[in-house]
Amino acid sequence: MLSGIKLYFAVYGELEVKMHSARDIWQDIPEQVAACIDRLGSGEFYPKFFQMMKCFAQIDQYMVFEFSPNGDYATCRLAHNVERPDLGLELASLYLDGSYLDDPLLKELKESVLSDTDVAPCRLLEKRGLPPVYRKRFFNVPNFDTKFSFVVLDRKSQHLFYVNFYSKKEDAFTEIQLNSLKQASSLIGSLLLKHFRDERKQRGVIKSLLASGLSEREAQICNMILQGHTAKSICNELQLSESTVTTYKKRAFKKLKINRKSELVRFI
Image 1 (cartoon, rainbow, N blue to C red):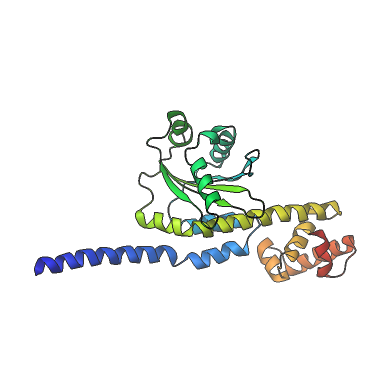
Image 2: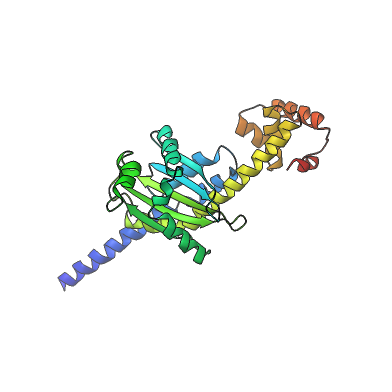
């Protein structure tokens, strides 16, 4: 009887710990996601995104690559090494210089997402068993042990986005963290896709406003107005007084020969 009670508490206690750990991971996620959504398309997005990802696991490097449907276009959308930003950019450049053709996960995940576009196929990759040159270049030299990867499909452009989270720690992702990342992969992918779209769109808006004769600050404030920011939120974001923001807005509207916010829409 005693051994049965011990077994019950051993199993039940372990289950309780796992459930508690999973709740710990998810309890702050809604607030973190909301913070990311508020900053989509802006330079403030990534700090909030990295903060959100800390809820899931310790990630030492973030890489996101974009591929066209026929594979003739590839670019890096995010390369961030937490300790050495220059190394992240260097590795991204090296990867795009043909090394992605040797990536053991990319082809597999691309085929998976094309066969089922409703899910974001994901995999954990450890450096053990990788081709020697690829392992040395992207794992040994930057001192990474593991990466968690998934692919999402942008239905509008049909472009594929290959998302990679690297860790230096051996067995960096616990079972609970790994399951949470898998469950959140579609959410994470959707946030990144929306940010990339808005970022590209806003660059076009800024370019159009600058071409119309606005200063960089005037264009920035007009762009924020188009995003739905109030005068107060612009003040908070840019650390400017309300009178300064009002002055920039008046100057911009005068240069653009408009009187109302609704007239800014033509610059989108």
